[in-house]
Amino acid sequence: MMNGISRWVLVLGMLSGLTACVTEVHEYRSRVTTTTSVHTDEDGQKEGFFFRTVAGPLEAESEQVSYVAKNQAPFRPDPALIQMGGVMPQFEPYSRIGNKDYSVKGQPYRVWRDIEQYSEEGPASWYGPGFHGQFTANGELYDQYSISAAHKNLPIPCYIRVTNKENGRSLVVRVNDRGPFHDDRILDLSYGAARQLGIDEKGVAQVRIDLVHAPRPANADELIARNEAKTIQLLATDSAEQARKAATKLSQQFGTAITIVNNRQIYRLHMGPMPPQRAEQMLATVHNSGLEQAYFVY
Image (cartoon, rainbow, N blue to C red; front, side, top):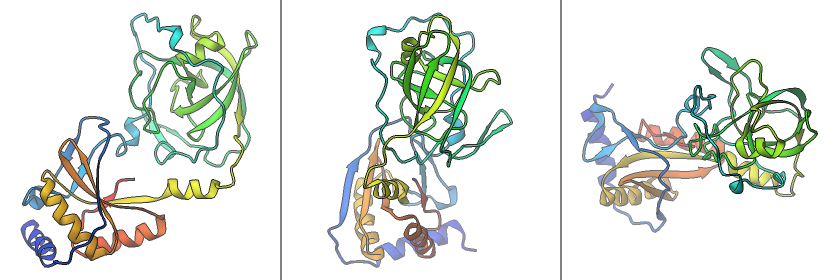
C-alpha cells in the first residue's frame, strides 16, 4: 500500500498532467449552517488540500435528535409569533437524513418508512426554549412558533392531525423531528402547536394522532428521484485558486461538471447530484483514479 506522500505525488501528478480546458465549472457560496470542522488525514495533507471535510448537520444523524430539556427556566414565548390555522399538508419526499433506524441512550427505535395508516392515543407534551434555532432530526432549523412536532417513529417530514381529547381542539401539524424520549409520551409538539391546542399551560395532555396524506402530484416520481440523487465530494482546499484549477482538470477527466462550494473559505469540489446507481458507479471510478477518500456528502 502506498504511503501518504506517495499517494499525493500520484494524485498531484494526475492533476498536473491534464491541460485541456472546460467551461462546466460552477462555483457558489453555501449558507453557513454551523461551525465548520475540517478533518484531515495527517499523511495525506499536501499543497493546501484536505481530502475529507465535515460541515453542517448532515454527517451525524445521531446527534440531531431532540431531548426534552430538564430543569429549564420558566419561559413565556410571544403568542403573536405563532402561525394560525395549522398547516396545509403538501407532498414532500422523505428527508435524506433523519429516516434511518436509530438509538438513543441504548434504546433502539425503528422508523416506519412504509406506513400508510396510523392512529394512536396517549399523552403529548411540548418543547421550545431549549431547542429554538437548533437543528431538527432532518436538518431543518427548529422554530418553536411554527406548527410542528417530534415523533419517535414516523417518517419525516409527514403530517398528522392532533386532537386534544380534553377540549376537542384539533390541528394538522408537520412532523420534522425525533422525540419525545419518554416512555409515557407519544408526541412532542412545538410551542406554537401546543398553544393552539390548549396544551401550553398544562404542559401535557391526552391527544389522538391520525396520519394525514397529502395528494400525490403528477410529478411525484420526479420529485422523489431528485431528492434521492447523490453528490460526491472529491476533495477540499483553503485555496480558491487551487480549487478552480483542480475543478477544471477533474471536470475534464471525469466528463462532468464540478461545483465549487465555498463555506467560510473552505472550498469543496462536488460532483453531482446524480441518480443513486450512477453515483455509486462514479464514486468507484473516482476511487480507482487515486482520489480514494472521496465520499458522498448527501
